[in-house]
Amino acid sequence: MSIMLVVVIRSVISFFALLLLVRLMGKQQVAQLTFFDYVVGITIGSIASTISVQVNENLLSTLVGLVTWAVLAILLAILSMHNVRVRKMVDGEATIVVANGKVMEDNLKKIRIPIDQLLAELRTQGVFNISDVEFAMFEPGGKMSIQKKSQKQTLTPSDLNIQPQYDGLPTNLILDGVVLQDALYSLNLTKAWLQHQLSKQNIQDTTEVSLAQLDTKGNLYVDLKGDKQWYIIPVRE
Image 1 (cartoon, rainbow, N blue to C red):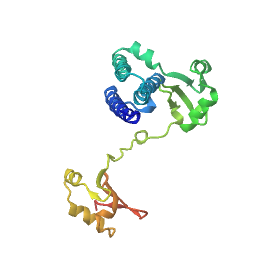
Image 2: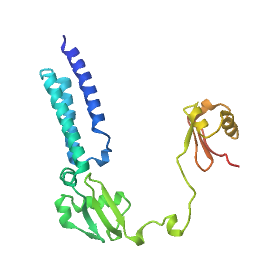
Image 3: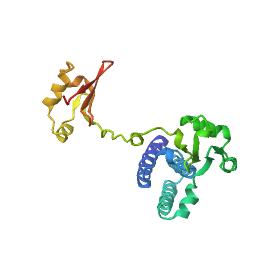
Image 4: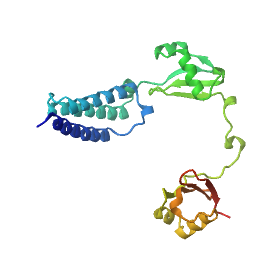
């Protein structure tokens, strides 16, 4: 058997083994990964690449190593869910770096974050003056959480005793020129109704529509294919 064919076969085995193990390990947003999670992921990926191209390595023993790393990661994740001490050991804890406008320099040194990086992180979240910050902390995944002082926070409708109208998820009615019949049925609407709404803007052919969405306020957003204009069509008149 040629080396090329061996590499192809081992790559296919490695690919699907990695896919299966990743599914078993569960989903987690990249932004929420801790440094330990990142290192484990890199190691598992490295073992998978070894299976693929290191034809001199025993396939079965390398697969066992790959599975062992994945199983250990799964077991550790399960333990972390049920044991606070294990979770703190693996993930770490949030570290307060600003308290009542004061930079906590000792805490910054513990997590080895320079003050200019702290300022940069604050700016990315729209904070340019540290005195506006009540608390700021670095989460275990490295993301910063900020609580502004009460007098610097943005007003919300509840602050003004205003009850805003409910704003739910829009429903896609047309995707890439295809009318989604199930979506229409779920709203007790018909294709004839949809065509009537489109005709208000002289749109006669649904295949010309890239996207059509109906929001909970009764507005139909229609985006035509290409560089043509988009429309907001009120349907509750």
